Length: 290
Image (cartoon, rainbow, N blue to C red; front, side):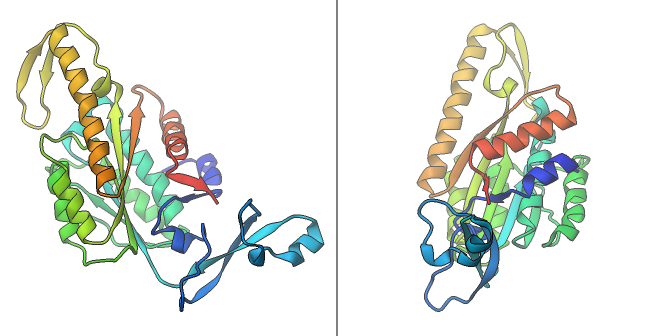
């Protein structure tokens, strides 16, 4: 579970999403015939429409604030958490769980939120801060799973097939290293076919991106295959993994989705890991100020 300090910080943030913004009040709902209700205030920002300024608050306090409204239409957030063997390397699994817990805390205030693991399991959709503990327990228990998880491409395709078309009313955030020797385009096409907005939060460790040169033995944790590697092979691997990240980003952008590379530092405390995860989400614009 995330700390009280992080919870206090998260009260100031919302998820950045075309889908969630209709619900979280990050933009005013103005679609014809759409029913809206008052949601919250925030400080006036340059470009806000003057008709949404609360002049009574200004008369009392001298501060300009904007009234935010939300559509009554419900949307849903899906967080997909990679539990495959490769995530256990370099502290990625711990970091990914911290990211998922932060996302859940922010999202459940505004939208029904559901967690899914790469083994095909998931919890029930929950909404409201009172249900956050249930979601956090599901995330923490994911760290002790011993079952087999699907590789990213297969996991994303299977997830998409479980959903009815949602026509832009849902967001899927994928927290994974996305390491698989298979094209990602088919999985992204399956998500698009369901009408999802999506973000790929690619979690990579220092060992993934910048392995030390030397005489090494590489072990494929998914297959158990072993391979001796000298400095030349390590350099070739480094070039290939960076090219893989670029290909992944390009595929996400072509599909109309967002891609974020999240780097993990090994050997840090839980508190520091949580701070890293929060800072990365804010720095990359996944979380934005309310």
